[in-house]
Length: 101
Image (cartoon, rainbow, N blue to C red; front, side):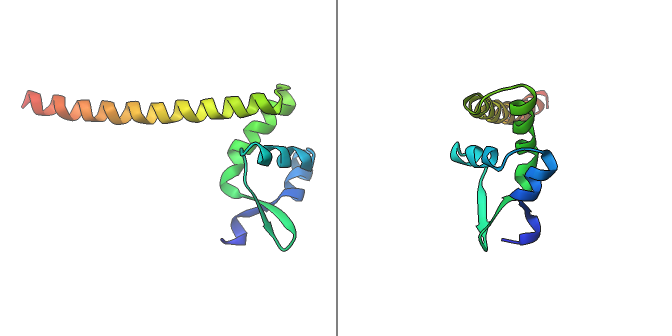
């Protein structure tokens, strides 16, 4: 794994003015993955958009970790259902196109 795609948790927390323990708790819930290299903890760059949403939910909206866990899983389920619906609609359009011809 390339270290240039990793964000040091200490720096991330200082930038966002949050406690390191919040990231640890999210990791305990399986919402983020902490990568340890040379005794430092890092996050993958791809996790940042979701993590920043979780930070806003917790600190701005006062949603606890259990709520964030539920919301995050529901949002993932909705996204999967939307992708399934889009694929189904595309197949239907294909069949409709062949029926017209």
